[in-house]
Length: 236
Image (tube, rainbow, N blue to C red; front, side, top):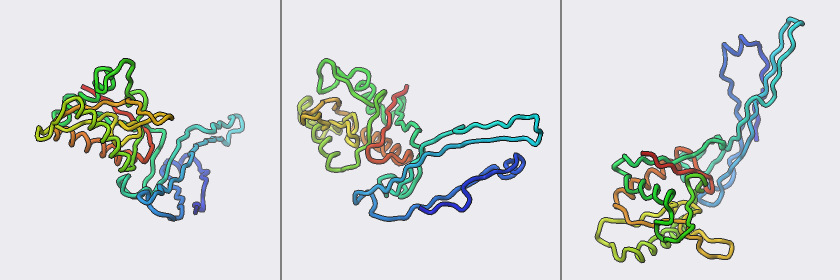
């Protein structure tokens, strides 16, 4: 990695006022394939701000604060799965998908998620003690398309079992957690058994599509990579 020539700045307050912005550029070599070929090229860093103020007045004690601010940062070259090919993320930030029940475009999607999060035992597959993550426990993005297809296959099987043949109805099988998450319908325990912490429901096809587009937007805007956590919140 190439570091900047100047890595620390010690100046008077007046100089900081005149030039408050200070940029440090670290450059990592661009090696290896993009994530599509199995490499996200991730570099993690901890940024720490320490401050020390002194005065020419010998009667004034110097003031110091080490670790005044800290932040975890991730640099990556993940390719198209993250929107822009290269990017930087403050990983301590909370990534969140927010859907509104009052939004007519995704009302059925939002209602399905609300029911799954708050009354999971009333969703299909139905059983006592069922719980579904996403509100307090995060979901984690899944990029592997073959595994996404397996999540959809399990969810669609549930829709077919509960509602029968719905072809030509304009309805689609909506699953929550989303097929693009590790918590999707095909999630299994250590013994290889389905954990069934999901809900499948028939909803309007266009509503389902618009909801899917919202999920993709959250992934790219927040630069959520494979196995990155995010939350889902439903509001009025």
